[in-house]
Each structure stands twice: as C-alpha cells, then as structure tokens.
Length: 553
Image (cartoon, rainbow, N blue to C red; front, side, top):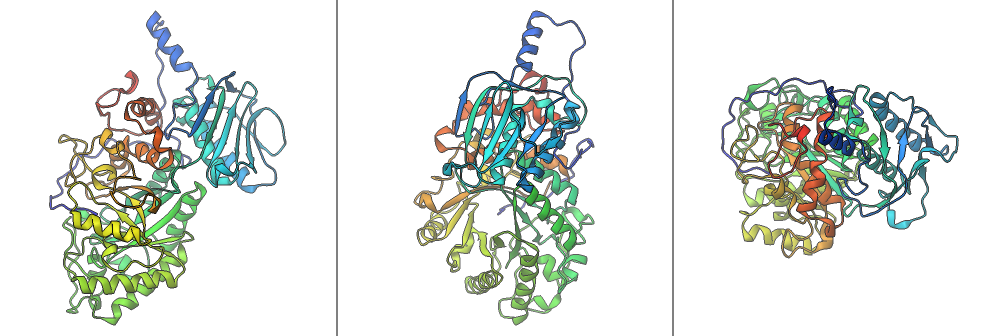
C-alpha cells in the first residue's frame, strides 16, 4: 500500500474542536453580519437564502428534474414514516436528530399518514433503484423520499441534508429559512462497492474518532468501511486465543506513543454503528508482511524463535510470518476465525502487500492457506493486488493500489487475474490515497506516490483506469487514508477533505457525469457545510470556494 522511507517529523496539532454528537453534528455555525447590508451584500444574502439547486449535490444524482415551488421546514413539520418498518422509523429519528439542533424545531417522527411534512416511504416498485437507490420529490407541501430498501431511504436522507442550507449541520440554533428546491431526483449508484479505509495501526484512533469518520462517510453515500487493524506498528483488536497481540503488540504506534486497541465489545460497537449508517465493515489482518507487532508479541511466530522489538518507524516490507511453521497456520486460523465471528459483513481482508522479505514460494503458501481459512469461516477474500501473485480463489477481490510508476508486469498480472474471475476494487495511490500531500507545502502526509491535488484525485475513471481489465470485473472504488503522520480527527479532516467527496462521486454517479469543471463548482458549494460541521478542510486553489470559507487553511 505504501512505498516510502521518509522519517516522521514532529507535527503541529490542529486547534482542538468539539466533535459534537455522533449524529454528524458540527461544532460551528455560519455567522451573519450585523451591519446594514449594501446592495451587493443584500444580493449575496438573497443568494445564500435561496434554495440550493437540486443538481448541486455531491455525489451528483443520476437524474434531476427541477421545477415547482420549494418546500420549507417550519415549527410544525413532522417526519412521517412507514408504520410497518422499524428501519424507516429509525432513519426518521436519525434525520430528526440531525435537523433539530440547528432549526430548533421539534420535528416529531410519526407513523400517522399524511400529505405534508417530510415523508419517508419504503416499497417502491421501481426495480432500477436497486437496493440503494431512491427518489426524492419536493413541492410546496412536502418532501417525499421513496426507496425499495432501507439503504436507499438512508441515502435519500443524505441528499435531503445537502439540499438544505449548510447551516443545517450546526449544533446550535441557526436562522432560517430551511427551504428545499422544488422538483424531483431519481438516483442509484454506479458501483455497489464505494469504500473508505482508515489505518488505525500506525496511529490508534478512539471509538469516538472512528464513529465521527463513519458519519462523514455516510453523508456522501459511501457504503463500505475498511479498517486496517494490524501492521508493524500496532495490533488493534483483542484476540482471545492470542491475548498479547493486543496487550503488547498494541501498546505502541509510530513515533513511540502509547497506541491502544479495541476490545471485542468496542469493535462490535464500531461495526454496529457503521451498520446503522448502512456501511459494511471490512476488517483487515495484514500478512505475511506488516506483521512485526504480532512477531514481537509471540516469539514462536518467528522462524528463528526470537521475538523482534516493537517497531515505531514507518519503513515497510521487513517483517514476515514463517511459512515453514505449523504454528503460523494455527495463528492465522485463530485470528481470522475470531474476527470473522465479530464481523457480519461479507469480506475479510488479508493484506498481502509489500512482502519484500518473503520468498515467492513462501508468500504463495501463506496467502493460499489464508484464503482457504477465510472461506472456512464463510467470508469472501479481499487482499491488496499482490494477492494475484498467489492463486486467487474463486470470487476473490483484489484491491488495486498501483499508480503511474507501477510496472507493466505488475499491472498485467492483475489484468490477467481479472480476466480469470478475480474482482477488483480500485484504489490507485496517486489518485485516492488521501494521505498523499496536496503540494510541497502540505504539513501532513507523504508523497511517495506524488502530489495529489483535488483535480487529480477526481479526474479519473475506476472503470478504465487499469487498461485491459474487464469493466465488469470492477466492483467499485475505495479511498484509503494511511496514518503515518495522522494522529487525530483534525488530521483526518485536513487530508480527507475536500478529496473524499470526489472519490464518493466516482463510485456513485454515472460515468457520463464526471466533469471537473462542473464538479469543482458543486464541491465549492460544500465549503460552508464543511465549516458548519467543524471540518478544517484544505482550501485548494483549484476550487472557487465562496468568500465566507476562502481563508487559508
């Protein structure tokens, strides 16, 4: 996943901010001026108060038909949900929790039918919507969101949030009006896999910080959350059969901090929280390399029986499980079995990248045994694209993180596997690795894959990026964020935003809609929303941010 040898420098920490509630409520509102407005100021205010155009969304919807009168929330608005669906009720309560702090309205959630208010409906007969699509219709009396399945209803709610003024995301009462433009949206995703990865191994992130990121992902209709749970610098999940993995292997991180790990209860809490936002968790246990934390915890896992010291640097590829020991396969079985039992999702990710100190024969032996173990526990194998150097099992998913400097031979190996049935998730490092520096002045991040400004991150197509790979082999796109230099939520915000919404759009929106010149305008309109949510994002000069959010950052 990472090719670098840079040393980690001391990093200034961002100013502390309130994280707000776990319902994606930000810490700061949009201020209003006190002086009498000039003509130009009045025009600007009118523009701010006007409903957001239906098509000014990220991800951009598949179909938009503007027209008719806007809908306005007021102190009598009710959220009406299907009485037969507990999930519809829960989504309604979620929406109310987002809207109440900023509006000050009661917004009761009711199963009583009516033609007014915000109406959430399940049971659409439009098969084109699939499991995640929705329709949204707005008029003078109501906003109605209809879907076939709860996930689609939830995604429609995220669209409604973006159609409301940015200050809706504030955690304190704000001035209205709260209007939604008239018209209709019909929307469904291009890809079924739209992911983001968080590296909690190089630096540990608390449950609260992880939940905050999940909430941010949900707003952009991302449906998969990949957790990188083990690496050389730290082991982050409790394993009953190998307890020192967490208690010792999890006791440090890059730079020598105290690290940490998730108890099984905490991991379940993360999984359940993600599920409540319709994200599937993909846990990763990296092997055969990126295993120093495990090797340091148990000497018997080393070929020479000697445990190495804990590691706090950022070099890669030096560690390896021992292919010739039976205990290695006991370890793999125990760990994957326990993680599988905690994870209701379809996938187990077994890493497989940067095994520079492992022979090809040993690599293939370990990865093929691990794949069989994943199948034994009823899960689908995922691995970094180097897994194609072993023998991918039927249905395996290879996550392609190659970039412009990836060799033709490596690319062809992945293409050949895709032609033979291996499915692909696209994560090119020089496009959607969110820890890559924006420019040479970026304090955080690394640049081994190059500098990745916002346009470069957006301006590519997952379906055609890997020349020769069948388009139907591509399941979707994932944006990883590695944590060599990131230590808290502020750091995640600075590197993920504003690039993350673009990755989400590449996964959701039709390929024909991908256009930088129109996207940058829609992205610019998100600036005040980032601010209202307490996100101190990178103000890229490539994006025409509105004046209220154009200060240096």
